[in-house]
Structures are given as structure tokens and as C-alpha cells.
Figure (cartoon, rainbow, N blue to C red):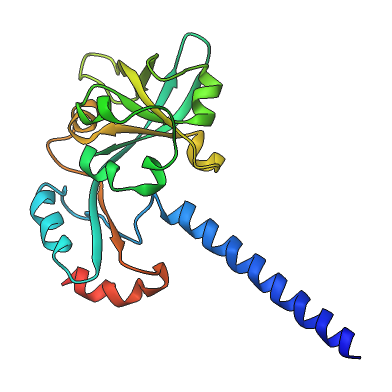
Length: 214
């Protein structure tokens, strides 16, 4: 009976430890690149994003506020092509995302900081047969206004290749400097959203809804 109780308790402890570790790992990977709160414009473009970002950053308990520009595109190389999500982000903000900076497998973010390159996921790099230093071509559906709908096509150098070990990110994410993303998607100095990261556990997110809204 004593051995049975020992085995039962040990099994329970092991299962709980594995599940808690899996939950933490999953949350760190999913939330590590996406904000705990997302502020988006509704009726008008978010053109005062600099002031809003600064005010949100001053809220107690807010670790980071990141303005981003998101848009779909087609990434291609000489070997293949794939649909991607382009995310424009300021270099300083990208350097503060440990999920990216701690998982750089090729290249570095130095060229990204100078606005001369992009950061892509490892699965996307493998699919397009690209390495750091190669060129990747981005094709966006909305280009210059002409008599016909012309896509916007522009080549970029791959500055860094990261791997989060999650295909949802590694196969579709392309990071572009914010100013370049605004120009690429023909945005008038506005952003798509502001990603907000809080201190501590993401489970505390409800505590920050009202302060951030105010």
C-alpha cells in the first residue's frame, strides 16, 4: 500500500511538472513575439502612434510598447516563392524581443538596425533556399497607382535568420524596419497597431486593460 501511494503521488507530480513546463514553453514562444495587449485604430489611422506609445510606456507595469506595421506579401527567391506576413518594427524594439534575439541562427541584426536588411524565419529560409547575406524579393499587392493594379516589388538583403521552433512563425514571418515597412506598404506615417508587453505573467493582463485604455 505504501509503495502504491508513493507511485501514485510520484506520477501526479511528474505529470503536473511536464504539463506546467509545456504550458510555460508554449506561452513563452507564442506570447514572446506577440503583445499581451494590442491597441488598434478603429475609425481613423493611428498617426499619433509615437505619443501614444510613449504614454503607454509610462504606465506602471508595462514593460514594452511596440508600434508595428503588418501586411501580407509574397516572398520569392531564385528557387521558390511563399506567402508571408511582413511586420515592420523599430530596430530598438526588435532588439528587446528576447524570443528573436536569443534565437538568431545566421547573420546578425546589425544590418537590420541600419535599415538595410530583413530578418526571416528558418523554415522560410529553407523553403526559399536562402542564407544570411542572400537577397529576398517581396511582392505586395498594393503598389503604385497606375492605370492598372501594379504590385510593389522590392528586393532586400537577408540580415538574419531566426528559429523559434514553431512553424507558424518560422515559415511566415519577415521582419522589416518600421520606416521601410511604412514606405513599402504606402502608409502615411501611421501604424497598424501597438503591441503591449506587461511585466510578469501574461495571466495578469486583465489588470492592465483599464490603465492602458485610460
